[in-house]
Length: 140
Image 1 (tube, rainbow, N blue to C red):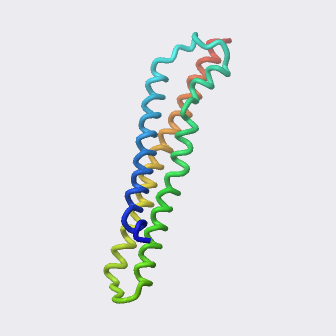
Image 2 (image 1 turned 180 degrees about the vertical axis):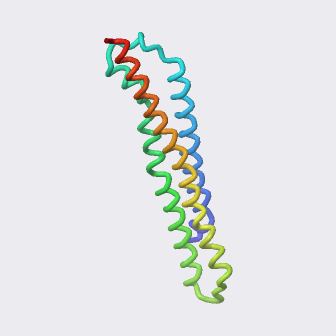
């Protein structure tokens, strides 16, 4: 339990930070790709869709799982808090409340990662729809 009390926040925030980094990386890559795309280079709609949707699954996984990673950190923090209380001795309400409030930071961090990624994901989906419609109009 000592390991969790010392390293839980570092582990959770590292995972969420890595997820955030990947989300930024993939989002920027997609925006650059969309700005440079040449529709005449694609011979079929399937190949265009495949190129356009690259990395979107990763963004979907990030936005759908970041809150759960944060919640895992919160649950772990609550477990550590209750374990500390169970060791007996002096139960200080201020310390318990401080520990519980720190545990909730992980859920907040998960939401901070998930919400912008969800917005970016939906904006990219909309841009893909516009590009596909443009491609279809050129092929008619």
